[in-house]
Length: 248
Length: 281
Image 1: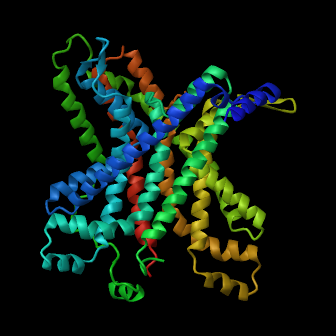
Image 2 (image 1 turned 180 degrees about the horizontal axis):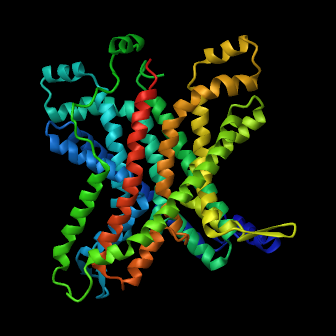
């Protein structure tokens, strides 16, 4: 490992290609922290957006007209406005309305920080797509299957949890994965509210070292590999869960 | 249709999505106005006790609306030009993906995947920081203003997505079309231009419009890199009003509203076209 760090230093001295996130331990830590922040942000948003999707899809099949309408309105609003403005709206507009708490140094700080708002905003954004995705999957489960489950004495919750959802998930997996990949790409927006994710840390490093070109190319490659691995894994998962005979 | 569907599948477990329960209610663009109004009104009580000498938030907003609208028009211009540029480059790349030459095919595939996997914001940074502020060709100096670079940066992901739309559209046609055209002795170029592409355009239109709406919403990213579009102007207007916190909700709601009014009709139209052009198996 040391040899690799040293190689980057030699590379800089000989060619001027400056990769401080390899040879400089401080920048290296920043980059690694940024990477894990991106992963943490993605996983948290992924979890909450799927939860929102499942609950929303369940509410959309509600017999109450207004429940369906409110969920429909939520979907349309979040799908047709820019995620960045949503993020600003949550962070700046709603964030300032919330009460402040005193931190351990005695200063005032907002009750929810940048990370929390990024999670809330991006989860609602991705969740709006997930609701529609899950709904289409739930509607693909035939009535007869549900009737059979009812005849076997399953409760409404059990039918949803144990019969409809496992079948629906297999149908919606391609669309869901697509959305989740998009979510990972959207986490870069958290840069705008100074959440220290990968792009933000890269920005810090290039501000300190004036090596925009190298950092920019590195960022492109990292995201290409990260998203590429994700897409590859998702495709394998899709194939493993495929219902035989359904779809192409 | 359901009968046919279940015959085709080996396991008759899954069916196509059922029609939604008949509900005449559809969200219209003006519902956004109502919602924005509610958001604004809801924030009034919190600040009702504020200093009466200050201008009310509606007066302040009304004062800034012309400027914000100008900024929004700029967003629309960026989105349209990025779309035009991205579509041209993407169509070429998409045709490259079905080229008979394996090298062209592979490099087109790689370029598409590369720009599709990179986040829009990273590509925007890439274009903003790595393009020079002017290019010298011969003795001529062509300036590259910020917005032009932003347009270029946004058209990169558009290019990759259009490339996939074109490839998908061509792949969605039954191979019988190709075979029939070849048996009539059309050359490959003729088959592509006269037979395949005219049929594909219809199918590619809904995803293309969808992409346009995504691109329009992505134009606000340009505010992060300092292009003076609607979000930047909003921030400046708020700063000019002395950072009053009661103005935050009306201003941001207004920006959300602008985008909603512009993008929602596009989304509805896309859904309509999708239904119209749906391929019934």
